[in-house]
Length: 237
Length: 256
Image 1 (spheres, rainbow over the protein chains, first blue to last red):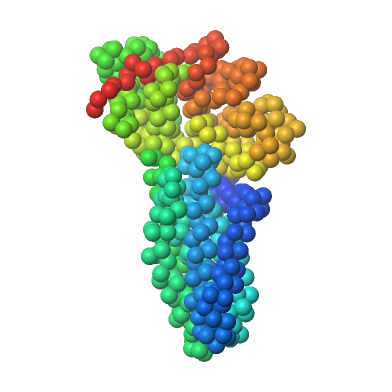
Image 2: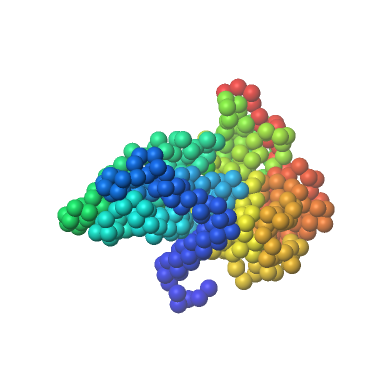
């Protein structure tokens, strides 16, 4: 063993390596299984397409609803994709190996959630202006929409992952995960859609974004620990 | 270093004294090292893993109770028992995955819960499911395992794939490999790992005869280097060496 590297530095290098390796693995997995990647985006797009048909194609009416509709669609699309987060790892035994790793579990949990967010939440955020246009959202509202989704969707992914970790051992966890997670999604939805409303009406955006940021900071600090504890419980039973 | 050994030695000596008493009382046939070796201060082999009075039940059915044994360095222990006798449950408990048990488990003389990180570092667990991602290639699968465990050497992946007979398949997605080849991908971890304790749950399932012979040689080689193996298999082990058997059928109870 090299005498010059101190063990703490070595451990943190190992953790960073594991974080990167897990991210890379998740990207590879979803690019090889494209349906997982595309499903939430199609859902997101479908809601925006069907909504005017079902309610009213009138532009003034749709413009009023647009912030809420886009946010609800993004929330449901994220929720839809959450169930699969740990499912395949559980079924093929990788999750057991993960729990037996000497590396801290929250690193892998965080890496998985971040990779998942990049392929759902970030993609939804980038697609959101298109939906905004389809729903006649005024151009002033676009920055608010993008920023609120950018800050809000990671929180949705982090919270959803706790639910996914808790229900991974159950045969039909899909319904339970919605029940567990939806109440926690409500604050994010309220502040997110309010931020878009505020930009449309020309009110300052800062307060809402600060609240969304605070929620994200809280989730980022606590959710990985909750996810790893939940995974241990799910595997242990 | 010396202080650590002496302490371990004493605690080990005390523990094995009590364990011998219990095991005779319960009529479980387990061989122990002579206690006298400890008293003289000769360290034949320190127990790596020590299990005391382990009890586990599933659906109100006792799988095993009062299960005590030690696993020494350089030993291969085969857990026997019919289907449903709790072999996998025992291995999951020992690996730390399951917490549905009562009793004590010691790793190098310390309670396993207190040295969790070190224990995980020195453990290689091969579970019921192979832990191989179907859409990744064997090489990509192993590369992630190497990142997961510091005692695994990523540089040896090609060599390990060669050893398990998957050279030439390293770029083929695992879903187009056979069931046996998928198990071999996971078994390649045995060639990569430098962990002293191997816990293997049915490692030979779906492996052909030559593959099994190669794996048995590997287990023996691991034991010679001072590692230990705890495994379940329905296959008759052809290993001529330090193999000990623990039968779970004798320990099963019917009521709580």
